[in-house]
Length: 492
Image (cartoon, rainbow, N blue to C red; front, top):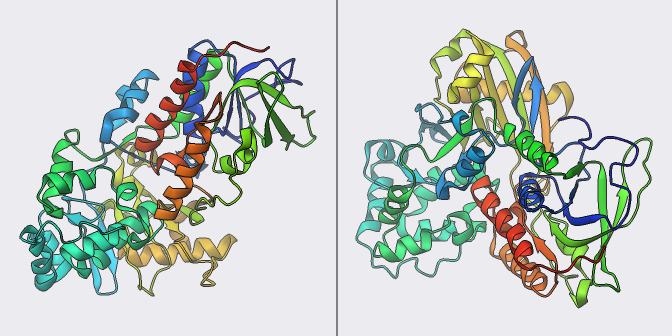
């Protein structure tokens, strides 16, 4: 959606205290929470300062194709996303990616990514595809994990430290770094184990300390089939379905409206100060509500001082800015999917600047069918932690598209020029991939602890639950249901 969801001269309603629940943030987390509240019969308002709802799960049009502008898949763990899609009538449209596998692009050359693993950690260190990527010596070192004492790596604070202790540096640099860079836009040495790989600590304990056996255990406990799924027509359809369900139950989704303050009124209700970002501006007003969900990384700033909370020193991770360049190409040489569903790029490579490439029309059957014979969709991702501090600033406009074409040609092993380009689009995301470091987790814990003492307030979102819909959806539902369970008499 490229326009406001709310319509009319006074989309916020006829009174500042007419809302029984207000949700700040119209990403998937905020919309899931709002759906729970609206379906429980509460008059619910959702605010978002951006142009359209959806956050990092948005759609856009490229060369006549409706494609995902952000996330194009979700992890199947827990089953929460699939269950939500089923409730919204999208269950029959859930699809698996094509079983082509992915590749890595490293300083030592290209190679297939081992198919059996978790964030690049191999479940079978001596498997042929692992040996092909690590070499004989690297695979042999990784296999030592199977006989090392359980205490080795047991106290490792980060995913990188754990993998290095159990399997050696080659697994970190050649497998884990490219995957984690693509998933989290971060380095595995910056990510807390529990946040990067939920359940891995418990699986390690149950596997005698072996990382490979722990990965096998986690994969065995996951739903049958692929570890990720998508939606025919795009994951962004989830956003449209959520907005439709919220509004069908009396809710309102209002974009281009920024929440700037939260205070406690004398009657115990919550007063929300807003600023309008429309042109021409609509009248802004303070809102009153009994229940407030903050599904935005700005939660700490909004809640500082509320009910005596001191959150001035809380510093949540902003995440690395991510730029996605989508190219629609007419190039028959890509029909063979030369790099499977895509390529993950290791650190230290100097021939490309992208951190990952997705061959979307090779990954998803629905994209291939929509594009038509001989036409291909590829998407390149740019942005790692620390890029801007190192002065690694991306070009803009046509220069960025030219860079993406050169990078795509290198990663796919196919010459690509402007004559092959049928269309392109550039999307920039900020605060979409907070790095789940130990510092970030401590900051989230501080915010959650403060919220426990705030009646009628809940928080959710990727910034607090972790990246990915599999983390965001159940957390948002839990936040809304906690407010519903903590019933309070309406003050309106």
